[in-house]
Image (cartoon, rainbow, N blue to C red; front, side, top):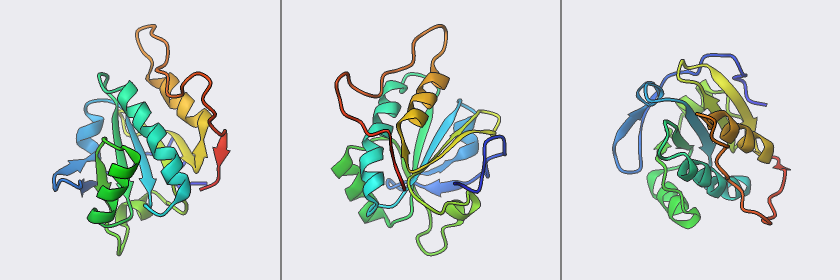
Length: 164
């Protein structure tokens, strides 16, 4: 269970991307909701979950959603992970020596995903892989009477949950 629970304010941060750009949570929240997904490159559950997080990102690209991965690894390893698992959303680099952002969010296991409302309130906190939580994010992002974006393909076998 993450230390930061639903209803709490998400700690602000600015971190570098693998491209050397600096991105901040505050700037992203000004555009709309944000999904944060913490990961380690050697984590098999992260390797399973991140392609689905990519689908969530792609399904909502034209909306207001920002998706940030937050890697607990160095730039080279993170870039390799992104290529291997087809991740195109920005992955930010937490300091792999001190993990200031991971610690601020109380991360004890990865993947850990948060959905943060534009006002900075945590709306969903999920540790490990949980299909229902990804579906809940998709439902939350549906707007103007549109159905939620489909993250899972018909007939595709997707496990309900995996511990992080």
